[in-house]
Image (cartoon, rainbow, N blue to C red):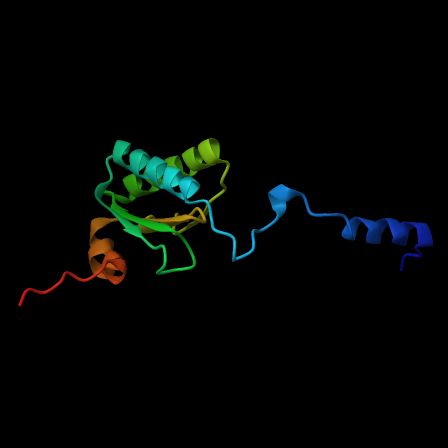
Length: 147
């Protein structure tokens, strides 16, 4: 057991009372979010996936529908190798260009890789897996039926 002096305890508690730097503060829910960053991130993601020959790319606007992101991108790669390569390159580009460290799930199997950037959620599938789950159909608005 450690014996601490009063001075050490004061230093520790003084650090806890220090103001949080602005870059680490989370804006209150009442403040409007700057959508331009989300749109720039979306544009960079779509451009990168297009350059990497992603197939059947779909962009879904989640604003007002979900609290976990502003946009969703769903696309396919022809093989597990292409799916893995596209995801690795995309994560690297996002980190270099925006300073965002993305969460990645499914990289080991590379059948369906999810990349969470915070504002944009990216799903990269192999075609068979995408067809099975039909994820974009859950989020896209239904087509209006004709009378």
